[in-house]
Image 1 (spheres, rainbow, N blue to C red):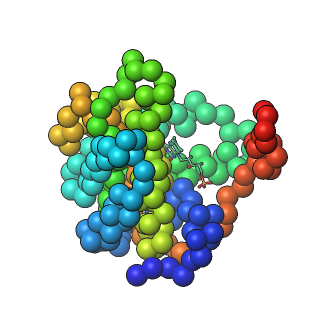
Image 2 (cartoon, rainbow, N blue to C red; image 1 turned 45 degrees about the vertical axis):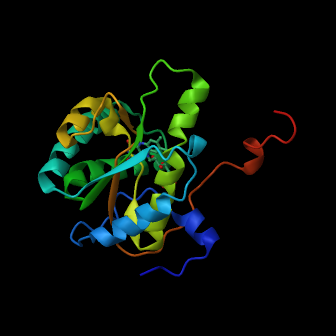
Length: 206
Ligand SMILES: Cc1cc2nc3c(=O)[nH]c(=O)nc-3n(C[C@H](O)[C@H](O)[C@H](O)COP(=O)(O)O)c2cc1C
């Protein structure tokens, strides 16, 4: 079932959801597949379609991935100063997700074929951009269906261990993120706070 959201509402209310993930409600395989079919409409460099999505629903594998995630998130939270309320709020949310990451019913790991370590920057940019738009489309499609997601990269510090755990061929495939997916508790989300447009937009010259 789709939420009643205009395209602009969808684009402005697809938040990083950490505290409002419903850990009890199962997520059907078909819903994930619908979102992934939409994700496949995203662009890839040279029509390569060299993307892969690993969907992890198995509780033991989620627990093991959760351990890797936590081993990076914990020290990150300790290191990070919390100068203002907004940063403290995000820290609290990350701490909450850290405690529950293994309970989130589905983890989605977007991947792209072809490692780019030591490759020139234009090639790196093309490779990453062949998976990131698709992954964001997946997250938008999920939001449209009442699901919450959060782009996370903590586990990538242990990408090789994660690859071994799930059987991803590490030498040939790069992982871009780990996206926890669950129904949200309530479906109302507000636009996030962002810098004024004129501080980031440069017309005709920087
Ligand atoms: C490249 C990238 C890496 C991120 N890594 C993490 C992460 O490891 N853990 C996490 O909880 N959130 C992570 N985030 C989520 C961001 O903190 C979040 O998208 C941002 O704060 C926007 O939040 P909002 O949707 O509430 O405005 C990451 C986001 C991006 C784009």
